[in-house]
Length: 182
Image 1 (cartoon, helix red, strand yellow):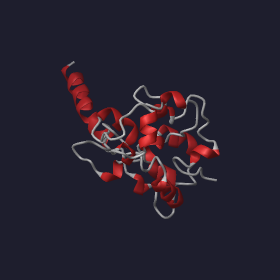
Image 2: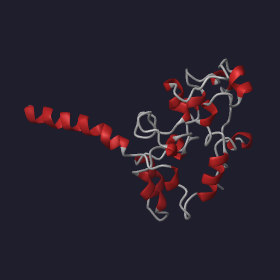
Image 3: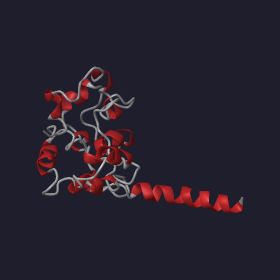
């Protein structure tokens, strides 16, 4: 019984460290033989700049329409972080380590922490590839309930009521994150 308790305690203590190590950053996806065009498009997108949207007087009309105060700096508001940075409280962005590579809604915010699945993803000849990628944590944002809804319909989102019936794969929305791969 004591042995079991010690093993469980070790697992509980190690779990946050293992999970925190799961994020790799957008640069892992931008490698020359991977998704450099998607990465460049993302950097210019609203998702790529989503942290900066929290700064004072940025997109003032949109903030005002959403019931926010345009002159307020929301970059320190914890209720905004879940949707404006990558890996909030999961090993990515934190106020203690405000690394710029986690600012914005990055690749892993929509596709999952990549440390485990990235190596599998680069192996195009892997048997049962899709199943193995899913098991390793790669998320397909548009399967079932979309990943988009985690933020766009979140209770803290001032825009939650505006996005109920959107098809996020529709061309007019893809520019807000990146063009869909062909």
